Length: 101
Image 1 (tube, rainbow, N blue to C red):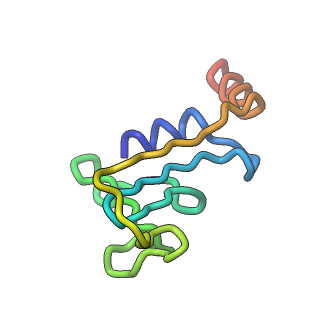
Image 2 (cartoon, rainbow, N blue to C red):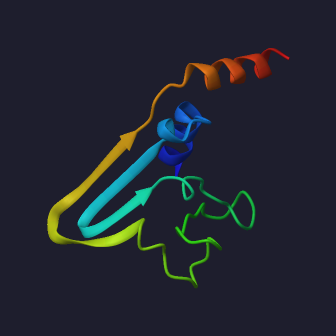
């Protein structure tokens, strides 16, 4: 979740084509963390785990969105993590302007 938060902080953009994504492949499982499931939540305070269940209610009781969490035909003997983000100059300037105020 720290990686998700850092990628979100550095690479956030209001442009849908530039929004960050993280893909995790482990064995035959694939999880694509991207909009609208790109933020982690801490449901009960600072001492609880941050979560992202990849469904509309962000709930462990609901199945994840099959467009974001699915099984692959062939497994990977290990785990691969791919991070994609773009430094959006307009967003970064807006953030700098807010910090100066």
